[in-house]
Image 1 (cartoon, helix red, strand yellow):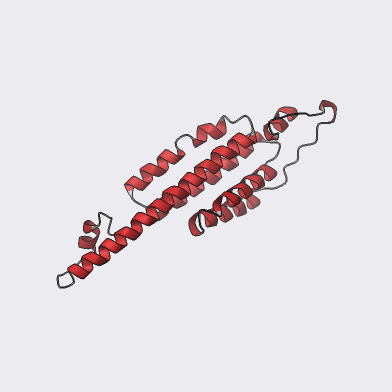
Image 2 (tube, rainbow, N blue to C red):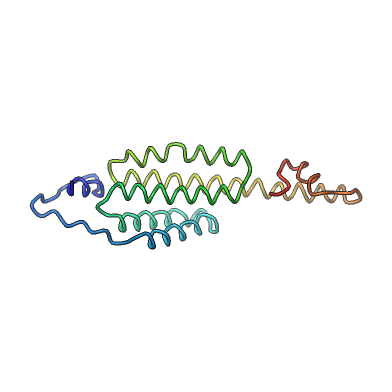
Length: 178
């Protein structure tokens, strides 16, 4: 069992001295995982897309380090982190089309990570999911900016009328609370 656990973390080529299998010791805990999630969430929601791959890779390496030797814990940590990123994205954007897009991004990631035979496979699935989430967020931000521009134009054209939040929101096809 110890040997199988180590195999998950090896790269493509595998050579392990069966007589001297290293002891598996997890080197971190939930607190460290929380910090990893917080840093990645900040990168995802506050920084540019160019910086995200490095931040995602760093997060994956930290998860690998804190759960080394326990593939199921690694998978659980990856899925937990992705779930929290998903929740954060959905809290920021309550649009149904955006929610559907996010559901599509996350539809297969759980299965892909759960069935991964190597950490590199699980990491790849998680990183791909994070990048697709960033792409969806960027598209949503761009469409939100155009909605703001259309709202301003509507207000300029109708400033002499009794304009309500609902009338502007209806004009740009958005929820007034958003």
